[in-house]
Image (cartoon, rainbow, N blue to C red):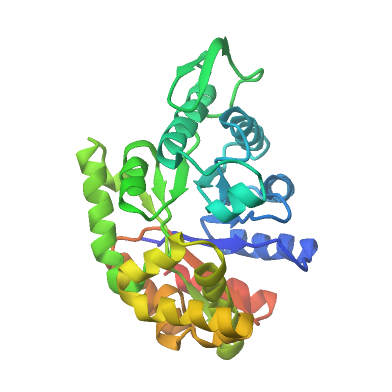
Length: 331
């Protein structure tokens, strides 16, 4: 059975849009399942997804992620419903809370209550996709006029994947979502955490075999050291600069000493010191970098842990080589 793999697009900072189009087409031709476009406090995800929808025919298209605070549930339904129509039914709704720093100090919205908001946002999106009159009374949202979308969505349900990692939030994901995308779960804890999540799915009366589990991942890199430094930079930033959630998650997963060292180094010496404090062991536990054979072995380890949608990347290779690497990782 061919494994499901996906790629990610981060279109913040310096950005070559045409190169992204080429890369996604290479992935599509090689049989990659899906592409997820990130959004933070730079460019929005939906504009690029619109362009990708027009330039591809098979690969699934998802947000990885958009937060569920800065847009209303109805606005999210409009975005995803429109893109599902443009892509002929290929969208994945990727949602997450982001962090208090981003929500309160970029969007200016109180970061609460996250669990009720998560549940209600998904419920309202599902109602609008199913063309049900929007009459809803929840803890966060109250709608009484029975609005429906002014077009018929292509699908009555678009799959919803949610990025979460705290236990209470993970239980809600198990109840309402179609996929789980946790963060800062090292490979050493992958099976334990996946088994726990799928137990929540069963407790909710749902079928675990229908749930997508996406986290960890591999990168086939021609220059391992360069790719490793890039990975470490992302880890250090999330631990030191993105509030307490990611720091606490990594601490709970057995890396408290490392997490504290990264925060302390960043505070005392800036970003360079913070990045230098990320050990090779920690970086490889969160996202492995190596050659094709090493990465295939790691993907097999992820599969044994219950992960069924794998993040993959290719760095430093030609277009032809990149396509062949994707094909090898799919086997």
